[in-house]
Image (cartoon, rainbow, N blue to C red):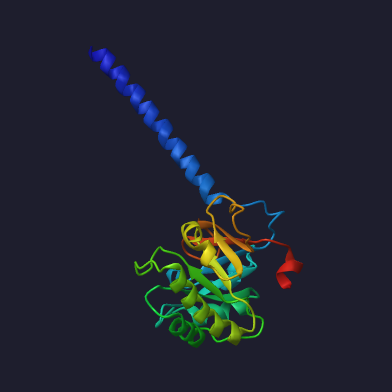
Length: 234
């Protein structure tokens, strides 16, 4: 009986070791996964103050062509590292854009004023981006009419100031709930380690949320553009 118990324990130990090895290998695969770079040659990142101080020249040298920087959130919050990130990323030669995290608890017009105060338009800016998601939001889920009204109020101000249409960042959950409510704009879609489905056209794909890039201490979101350098320039 005792010998049988030892055999069972040894077998369980072996299975545990195999499971742990499998988990480690799966995690390493996840950390290094990326889309077909021949199909999507332009890689970008999106960052906020959570990434801390960034060495943008090192970032630019590590196969990064563009960066979206968090500028603001809601009606009064502004990212404390936006100005420096914008200045240094431009100096490193990256194409740079700003984004605003949209909250359901503030009027769209008020949020537009906050974003424009934080990220005044400048020459060669990428289109302004609007982050639409449930995670980290204020807990209120607006109905279709309210959502569209507040989005239109935000976009009318921001697009008039920038002179170009905005880009809408959407998570799978948000898109499933409100795809019919969105104004017709280009989409920046989140789909971690899988290509976005065909339910809505996209121009930027956020494919990773734990990526690694030289010049940034810790994980960072990774993105690709749907097109080549000529399309990106246009």
